[in-house]
Length: 366
Ligand code: ATP
Image (cartoon, rainbow, N blue to C red):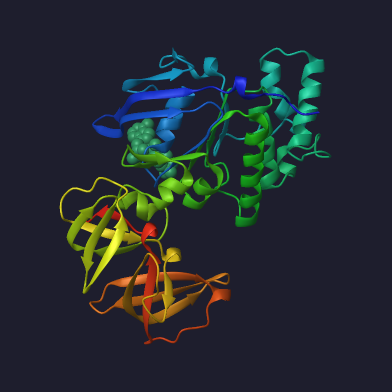
């Protein structure tokens, strides 16, 4: 009853030094990226960073100005979109309004000249797989937003493409529906084994779905890695800040000692993991708010601790975020599970501590 796409059908893509200019404007600069067979790769970045341009180049709708695109070792730079035969779910890539759910899903098989028995079987399987049983003969206008997206996913996957491209497919859906569809896409990826390339500007969506995340800014690929690696070991201020809130502690007198770094932060020395090659003395220590805790003393173990004053707190239900200031006025945020803390009154003097391995260095500027 399941469609056996298997890993063998999934394609491997290699982008080599891709550049794209529109007149004098550089939409993409020297972008090289390997997309593995069966991978779920997410292109993440702010509006205008070049994600869609890159996806359009992958799809074959836009030709790159420079560089090459390889699929399974073959140069496909000049192969038109219709011959790449990728599945696509785009924001504005609407369903055919005059065709029923079944007819929409059958469309890619019809244009490929599949037999009607084959079409009937595949469409039936796909309808079931995306949870649209009972809606087969409805027109898109009679479906909810989530159901329409399911039809779009089914239509994009029914012909067993080697690559599925998705451009912000859920940005119009409300939070609950969006989370449901995210799980749906994740499941479809696992079941089909197809290579998925997904565009979003939503960092939590990228972290939740992907096998790897590629972070774009101003037409450049800044970093690519597993969700946990890009979140916990960002290589630039931009990546660190785009992926979530981060505390930045300016350091003086940085000393590098083996795989560790020690720097002077205000009146204390703090120790950090030396995860990247830092050159020059201008570094900041970076620590995520959820990796810090508020405590009554400096604590034992392999930890850093600094003194702070609580300025206020924001209650988020599961977690509470404390806003603090150091003696010299550096602002910090500490996020702790609400259940694990008792409320701390503003103006209380406290210690903030964190494990050495949760702090990392970033360049002080930019
Ligand atoms: P968004 O999340 O808003 O879709 P994006 O990261 O996908 O953003 P792109 O759509 O790739 O960004 O656009 C990158 C830049 O290239 C933008 O500044 C955009 O204005 C520009 N651009 C894209 N297509 C064209 C075009 N056909 N002509 C001129 N400029 C373009």
